Structures are given as structure tokens and as C-alpha cells.
Length: 438
Ligand code: UGA
Image 1 (cartoon, protein in one colour):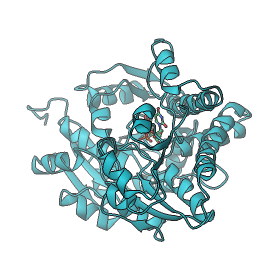
Image 2 (spheres, helix red, strand yellow):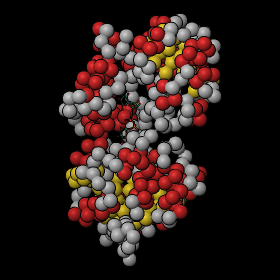
Image 3 (cartoon, rainbow, N blue to C red):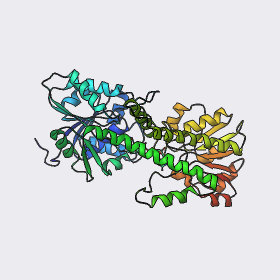
Image 4 (tube, rainbow, N blue to C red):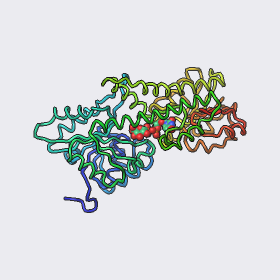
């Protein structure tokens, strides 16, 4: 029977309780759908059922609680039941990269097997995890192998464009919704699900939708490496990257976003998707040299930053204070964060590391157990030979810089995210080096 309060309500299962899966489940429930989010991880599911998210994402825990109380959202380990109770199944499991750049699709394969063995009637299966172009063809043929011929299904690809740290906002106020479909029925169902969201809805074939996602992340990565390359030219010429970026961004064809120079991009998505895209392009006969260069510039950016520090002070035996470990602010995620690479390089040159991050220290300790973690930025500065800023958390911009100067052994700051104005820092008596600015 149709729900009178939410006439567009659809029964949805979301497979995978990672950041994308949970955000998708929670936001669909907030739109009025009936959602079951499933994962094999018992610990994750039981903490979500209690309203606790296993990762930090602003506003998410609050919405989990609200939607569970309203009985529109449920967390479960029982994939069988979730599939049977739903009409539309979203796959939102991880697709990590293997060392050769090929994405590991094991989790997707496991999800398809489980869906196939639970299905007794029509389902629309929507792939949401980021995958190389033509993966949905493989999903379709794999599912066909597990299903009796009389059970019908449709496949669709609906990429996510969620940024960690503002995933809920991005989901509910997207720039666009891309729906890669093969049938009218799949299109109708997906439009019904997304009906409450006001945004351009682009209907495409599945392969184009898959390509849109990889191209979007590759383009964002390209913008960042481009501006970092220009920052290097700024350093060689005495120009100022902030002004150059401003001047570029006013051109509507270029736009002001993703032109922030720094120590390069990190996180679970951009580096992984870039690698996977380069790999997939090669596999299908195109050598994507441009993206290889984007990747190379990104790594070089970190190396150069360490060289900049080593050029100012001999690293052996020095105490380096690090501010910021997460790959960007408003997240506790340190996966492929520039901080890991930079700290590793500083340590292998003989430096001792003290660090602070407002959210990411628990995650960082798992990867870097052998550095000293501090309670606050001032403890980091205490007796350190210099301070190094690796993430542009807002609280770092409000530091009492006079106090920092008193605490440091030498008043030296290397700013990998350009959070301070160079003239102000020099006026305060710091030796201050940032990216693309003199
Ligand atoms: C990225 C995309 O922005 C999302 O659209 C996409 O949905 C997501 O990947 C995904 O595929 O799931 P995210 O990884 O959360 O989102 O992070 P971004 O905000 O894109 O930042 C990535 C990295 O680029 C960060 O390390 C950030 O510090 C760096 N960055 C970003 C710059 O160095 N300069 C900039 O101007 C912007």
C-alpha cells in the first residue's frame, strides 16, 4: 500500500556500511524512503544501530538516530532479508586499488553473489561504488550466472559525488544526479527515488555514467596538479599563487574551485580513482599520459615540501612539530593523506615527530604508532625546531601565534596549505615558508 505521508516511498537496500553506504542510506531515509543498510561487519552494524557512526562525518550520526527512531532506517547483517524486503538494491561497497592499479572488485562480487542467491522476484540493482567503465556489464553477466532464468532484474549505475566532511550536504543538495540506465522501468524507479531532490537529473547509458564518475575525479585531480605546477613557477619567479588562482578562477570557463595549491591531493578517492582510470584506459587501448603526469606532480609536491624543510634546517635529530594529519579538514580519514608520506620522509631523514590533529589521531595511530601524539597545537610547538602545517583545520588559523613563537625552539613555520599571510608572519618574526608564495 502507498505511504500517504511519503507517496514516492520506495523500499531500498543499501549494501555496504562505509561512508558512502551509510550516507546514501541515511539520506534516502530522510527523503522518506524505507531503507535497510547491510554489512557483514557485526561491530559496525551494531554501533550504527545504536546511532554511532564508525567514522567522523558531520551531521550523519544525528540523522542516523532520527531516521532509526522514525522507523525508516534499519541496520542489519542479514543481506538475504534486506534483498527480499526491497525493490531497489544499491551496492556501495569498497573498491580498493591493487598494487598494479586495478581496482579490487571482490566486495562487489560477494555482494552480487549474495543478491543473486536471495532474489525471488524483480529487483533493480544500482551500482554506486566507483568502478571502471564497463564494470556494470560484468555485474550483469555475473548476476545472470547466479539467477534462475525466470527472475528478471535491471542494472543501473548511479555515481556518488560526495565529499568527505560534507557528504550529507552534497547528497541532499547535489550539483547533478547522474542515472545510467538501460530500461524505462529502471529510469522511472530512480527518478521516483530522487524525486524530492531538486537538481539537474542526467539520464545516460550505463557506460557513460561510469565514465562521468572517473572523469570527474580525474578532472578535479588535474586541476589540483595544474595549480601546484603553477605554484612551482610562482616560487621560481616571485609571483603569488593565491593571486594567480584568483585571476584564473574569475574566468567562468575555469571556475574558482579546486585551485588551492598545497602539498597535493590525498584521501581514499582521488588517488585511487586516478590509478584505476589510468589502468583501465591502458587495458582498453589508451595510454592516458596526461593523468600519469597529474599523479607524478602530486607525489613530487610532497617531496619538494620535505626538501624545502631540509633546506632550512638539518633534519637529523631535529624535533618537527606537525599540525594536521587528515587528508583534508572535517574528516578523521588519513587514507593516502599527504601527511603519511611527508612524515615518513622526515623520519627517514632522522627527524623526530610530534603531531596533533583535532579528529584524525585515532586513525593515524593505527598507521603511524611510533610518533608522539599531543593534546593540542601548543604542546606540539613546545621545544620543536619548527612547525609544519599539513591540514588546513580552521582552529589552526586561530592559533595564538605569539605563544607559538615563544614555545618553538626556533620561530620557523612551513605551511603546506597556505593558511597564513606571509607578510603577517614575517612581521611577527617568523621564518615562514608556504607554497607558491614568497
Ligand atoms: C572526492 C570528490 O571531490 C567527490 O566529488 C567524490 O565524490 C569523492 O572524491 C569520491 O569519489 O567519493 P574527497 O575525496 O572527499 O572527494 O575530497 P576532496 O574534497 O575532493 O579533496 C581531495 C584532496 O584534494 C584533499 O587532499 C584536498 O586537500 C585536496 N585539494 C582539494 C587540494 O589540494 N586543493 C584543492 O583546491 C582542493
